[in-house]
Length: 189
Image (cartoon, rainbow, N blue to C red):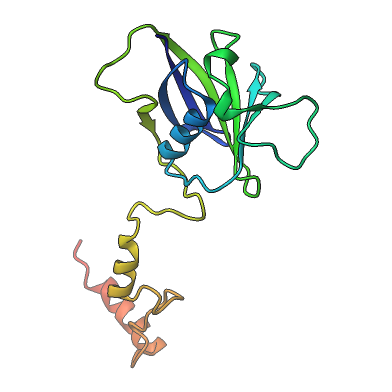
């Protein structure tokens, strides 16, 4: 049984990617779930794959379900289409679009085909992760949920303009210039 290894990039940042291994007999719906899990996205939204070429142009559509839109050619359905049936090139590419409102676009590229299956793995699986995945619905910090605790504990919103009151009381311009002049004469040469 052939094991296909795909690299899934974020369209806008190719330094953030996940490598996913999947059997050639598994379906596109399973690949969709593996990609979403690898990038820590939920599965609540509509999505579709497009067969693609080296220029990342969208070709035949492989959709989660039939959507209310006009199709140039009848789309394939993810749950009925095996991945191996759509591999026509040793470096086959697909474009995966998730959440038609936010339009998350992933570039999926076949990077390896192996005949040996690893008995310790459950396919599909993520075998490599590079970069920090973006947050699906907004900003994601390195601290994650713990940031709220830090913000509340130290009240990071107080003094928001960044200026303190140090040195403002009791000092006049005359005192400052006297101190500056005295500093020059006290230096040893």
